[in-house]
Each structure stands twice: as structure tokens, then as C-alpha cells.
Image (cartoon, rainbow, N blue to C red; front, side, top):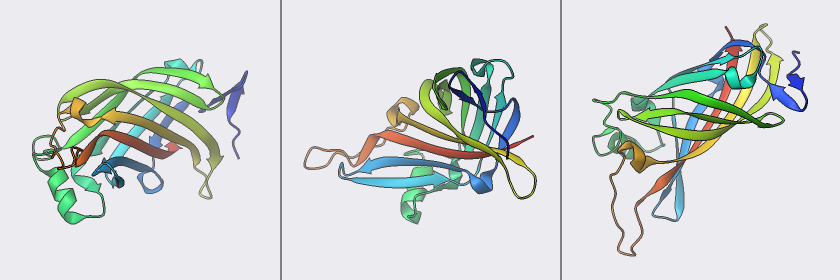
Length: 188
């Protein structure tokens, strides 16, 4: 088993290039429905790369893409609506992209990661928290690193503005979206 790199309380991803293993990773989200319930969904087609710096984690960078048509909320009609021009408009904007602009160590294995998120050709800087969960060798001899990423975005910042107002005055679909990404990445 490979040990995590540590220096003065810092847990780091070992230096090198790492690729997300789609079979052991997930790109998911949560959003409020009717202001009272939470709808969860995920994307099944995505890829991501992390280049962990040798010297200083702030010199690391990561990027990835998601095929928006791969959305799955467990409801076929809702998924079709999310693929439509009302939401993601997958015919015109088939993928979302993210690329880091800053990586800052907070404590232990926790990092604050800022980057450019592009949805429907609208790019905004977002900030998420990334936690290095560990590094291990799998049964087939591959070195892996686990990273969990959590954040919140406002979907309206990216042109996802479709909405219905309820008679009670609330909204049908929440504007705040929780981002939940769990990555098992393999050393390139």
C-alpha cells in the first residue's frame, strides 16, 4: 500500500498524472423540488485528469468534461426535460467543462479548489472543497488516489433558468445545486 505524502500536517496526492476511473467514480448533484424534497441525479459519461505537482500542491491542476446527455435522475420524463432547451439543451451544448485556476491547502487532506466551470457556453469561476481520501494499490497493481469534491453552484448563473412559480409562492426547481463528485483516479 502506498502512503500518502505528508508534510507539516498536509496530506497530498503523490506527484504525477492521474486519470479518473469512470467505473469507480461518480459525478452527482442534488437540487430541491417544490422547496420540500431533494432530487438526486448523476452523469454516467465523464472524464477527468489531475496533474499533481511535485513541489507544491498549489502548482497542481485538474480538468474534466461531462457529457450532459448522460444525465440520470431515475425518471425518464424528467431526464428528457433536463436534456431539452429548457435546461441543458444538449443538442447545442453537449458537454460541461471544468478547469482549475487555484488550489489552496486548508488543512490535512482538505483543499479549496477554484476553477472555471462552463455550462451552455457560460463560464463562471466556482469554488469547491476537495478532500484527499487516500492512496492505495488495487488488486491489479494500479496505484489509485481517492478524492471527494463538494460544492454548491447557482444554476441560473449558467443559463439554466427554466422555472415555475408555485401557487404557494415557492419555486418548482431550486436554483442552488449541490455538486457531489467522488473520484477514484489511476496513475497514468
